[in-house]
Length: 430
Image (cartoon, rainbow, N blue to C red; front, side, top):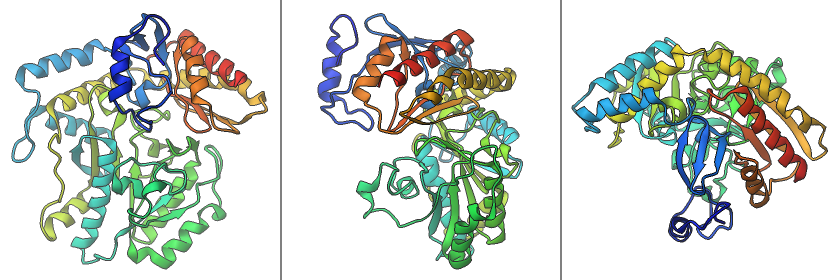
């Protein structure tokens, strides 16, 4: 379906030749042609403007076309756009590494760059396996993960996504068999009891010597269900992993850089992982970049074991343009009143989405930091819902039973109110 207005010939090329994410080639879902973006607004080819409620899948935290990030990239282009990272280095990577190590938990001391969040998870998993191999424990090949978790679309990452709801059950016979425990039922702000961690403790008691690591999204489970769980649960998991000598990997790809009200979600529980994955908002939505950050102990063990090097190396690792965008984005964030902005967004989402709580077909409404979620009893009819959002001048893309908002941090109260008003109206009409 073309956007409202005049016929767009480029959309026919798109429809016939471009495969969109999680979509059929001949899908009848509407596709809208964005020609420019500024601040929190996307401009379509027909001239219509949409307030972006998704931050382009959670990464455009400063909005679009930001002059400071634009300027930083223009300056970097005068020097070089890319150079291989094998045997070479460059200033943007060095400065970005220095900045990252100043803001992540202080036990994390080494940064490995990759080009997407999913690959950063692959790197983390390989890092964990190679660590144990170097320690003479090559049998540690399995991972524990949470039900309703999501960690990416590449093969290693798929294996630790929920095997039923994680969108990858089609490939289950090809994937390594991992260990899954139930999603924590204790909500954010609630305490965590012995029953909540009993299943994990049982697995660790039985199989800890076969397990390389426990991988989880701290506090917020993203694309697997948008669930916010107790910080006490995270503390209990960290304690058990230490007790049973299992590495702990935090996937902060969606939660990093302020989205939950803390710079990193693990700060809600004051716990530190052995390995952390970051991406998405890392570059402010400008370029694809991710990082896997780990401890001195892990890199020293890998260095001193066989084969004496870490076995991974992306072609576009630490791309200078992407590192430049990331450095500019992080500086913008840290120099802003981002905590106040997220607090304001949280209040706006709580107030704006409140009417949905009274609707019979709504199961739950939950808000944390800059994330607002309305969970329905049945799956959203995307073909019907998306045009209704566009008609109201907003860009919101539901999935499954969930309609959610993750707006850019720069959004003002008026635009946030328009977003929530549109969401409530559409939820009420479907």
